[in-house]
Length: 267
View (cartoon, rainbow, N blue to C red):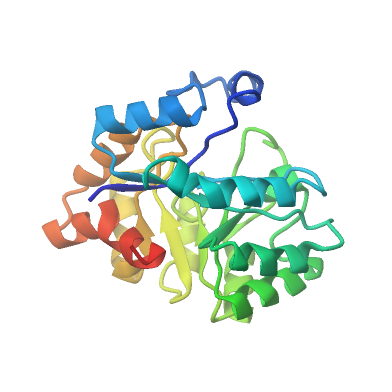
């Protein structure tokens, strides 16, 4: 089973605008049109069995709609898409909405510090981290550089490590191999922490050196690394090919491509 742990989809009505805007900002031609239908079609074409769709509340007040949509995604997609929810840090009922997300059956949430305008280490985030830890909700962060905020990084590996150590029972995935374009610091500060997870999103596109990728993997818990693409911004077959070309053991390759995600998602 191959599972892509980092995918983005949008409702059909807003997909053209959302994907078009991000394509202009990133300068990357999207692999899908951002809709659920096209994402499923491309998954079939590339042998992806299941994808985790990461939603982001970009302003307070979006959470309820986003989380309801995420909760319905698995059944609506025939069991092919698992939706993660989101809350905005400035929402006055963010903690209550996390509790509701858990009751909806969501397995995790996504934070994007650049879009949501917070730094990962800010103390105002700590009540949310505490709630996530107590609710046993998995959380994925965008980490490292982002084209949306190229001059201001909101999640540095060193600061991410401080948060992970402060909340040792909180399962935290720092996407893009721990910090996009900051991979030496990922190796130095984040690799090896037991409650920290990585996905491989954009490692191929942004040319993470395979030797450094292997060093990070060797230092990190083997159960804590998952395939990710950031689709529609990277073709999942390219993401999977990058992992396969690292020359890892068959067992480790299979773990990254799907088995680790299966366990995290409780499939």
